[in-house]
Amino acid sequence: MVAHETLTESPFALARNIADNMPQLSHADLYLAAWPSYSESMRGALVGIALLLCGACSRERRFPIEGQVLAVDRARQEITLKHGDIKGFMPGMTMPFKVTDESVITRTKPGDLIRATLVVADSSGRLENVTATGSAPVPADASTGSRVEMLDAGAMAPDASLLDQDGRPRRFSEWRGNTVAVTFVYTRCPLPDFCPLMDRNFAEVQRALQSSGALADTVHLLSVSFDPDHDTPTVLRAHAQRAGSDRRVWTWLTGERDAIETFARAFGVSTVRDDKSPPEIVHNLRTAVVDRSGRIASILTGNDWTPETLLARLREADGR
Ligand SMILES: [Cu+2]
Image 1 (cartoon, rainbow, N blue to C red):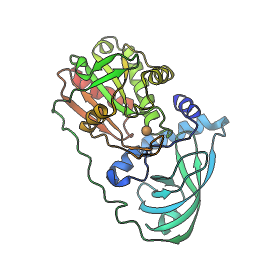
Image 2: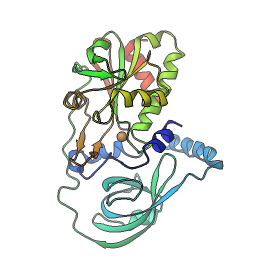
Image 3: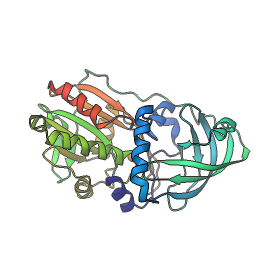
Image 4: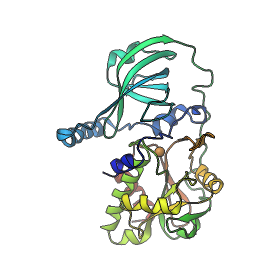
């Protein structure tokens, strides 16, 4: 599985997704960007698949984790935890975690300090053995975020000068005349439900396009990295290969950080990095469909859309 390759390749040295700079993202955004929130039926189907796949696997990894609860979402059975470094897995950051034990959800309150075991399976993470160790005031800025702005459907997508995985200068406007899906990722992203999921979804859409004949000529997929310092064309080329991307259908782009950030922001992508080296990147997920005239047809937020959804949006925008 692609996610697995990605994970073993960048061995959890950095979970740069949702770091401490949470105020930059709205709460809803954070949830959208985080663990999957499939519909109930989909969830059932996934559990079924996971059980089948895991008949023979014991890929669960367990890590001690400590931190402060910033929010509890009963409906989603999630608690948002500001946690410290998890040795060998990820640096300290704030993110939501699934908690399957109902009684923990019921008794946990924002401000609680907890100790728990983070259990990471193939495509999700959850907390077990949650024990409260105390409580402290929740930092005032912890959950107040400004909404992320993005262009509305019908607006012209901005242009940008970028570089493709062969190091060739490319402008986004070169794809006018094509219906385009553009998503924003980075290759070091260690969380299977974030960027690696976008890669898997694109791979699946690519397969559908390849087998649909006409669509493959008019629809193009673009993955833009917002980590250009690391994601050079060479790095992207290798990553594209692992993702199984066919350059006829799917192009990877990097470039100057400012150019990428301005471009990405128009689609509602929010990235925040600190000045550590390498930087921690807090980000949300946005996948936009841009029609042949360069107008935004729609923007899919978060990670809870399926390849079928994207394909349907592409077909619609492409007029087929
Ligand atoms: Cu990511």
